[in-house]
Image (cartoon, rainbow over all chains, first blue to last red; front, side, top):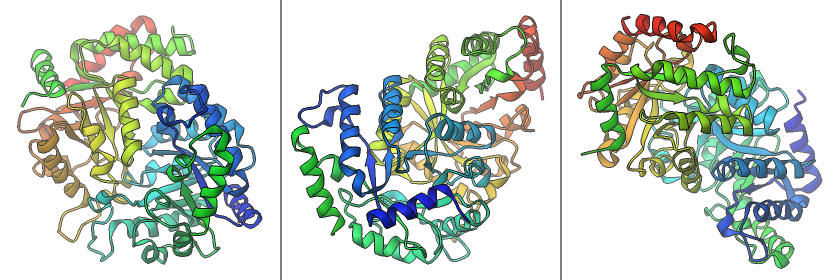
Length: 265
Length: 265
């Protein structure tokens, strides 16, 4: 079945021979030399990062909270940055999810207003809280399953009476929902040694895999362990790319050196 | 131990003799006769609702998604409405939660930028994703535990090998975290017949209880079953109040009639 997000991803994967997603978590205080420490500097920096990684990226992932914290000017910046990306999917990392009408409002905000191609969602409240997102047939939704932070053990890894941990129950449920809606994937962390073991739980599901680079995971390991039956995965790299740039004048070179390093590890 | 949000709540509960939270989920298309169908109309309507319920409310709960969906003008509206509430806590219902730096950005957006007194959070990623909120010692955090939607059974109610459902494990963990941080409560739905049975799991924890009114729960039942060892609970009513107003000219009367009805059921 044809699905716009998945079709574009498969095409870009073939054309660019990568599974790289470039995360955009910018901070005004951490902008490299050569960019003014202002919203304009932040916008300019993000657009330069997009231009410098475009040849290798199958997706861009702006982190909504990093723009929201700047208030209304931050949201205008996100709109400008989003409009700068024309032919690569944009995953707005929002971690939303709520029941009924509220989920509809969240989905309209992300998909209609901000024009995201995909987003990230919390599974906790179940299908009622996710369905309004899943029903956008031309969008795609990555639902949290197993994350790479230490306190994933608090709830995500709790063993159920059926003999599997909660995150595996969520993954198999997501695969069922994907069969029904065609718009469902999962977030599964790369630094977890469980990535390989949870792949078989939902073999067809597309995984968005954070945790590569600064968080300790390796791109090629994550790809080998995390790709689905179609050979697809989305491996996100944020901090190790953003912090590689020391100066606006060396951006192109700093990014390419870091990309070469990341994509061969 | 003194805590600003809890102290204010206890004082207002004594002064007003209610546990009512007024939810603000406004929609331009659903504004009563007499309000222009515009952002200005929406702001005016919300402020009128606040003025008409202020004598009975221990909290106001604007639903962030209903403002976000209106874009930048919607966020300006929320700021204006928030500034209209001066001496009653404002819970900005945001359903956030993410790891590390992102949670810090989310917390700064809600607590520093939007000046919320409290918010709502997803538990899924554990303490890493909640700690940055809990550390605001003068704010308060309601973490989702048991919600009143049918698909709460998908994940929230899954039985763990320890013999308790996931939501009960989350509630007892939240009570531990509240002992440590002093800023933690839970969201527990009123229409669930489990409200009474989960009260004993975390007897000291403050519950924010949605689902009263339009969703079928009764205020007095929710209060009796949901109050903590200090006699406190926050019972939220949104739709049944907002939809009670048919005309701007009858707002005061429509609200008072509905309040009298809700608070005695």
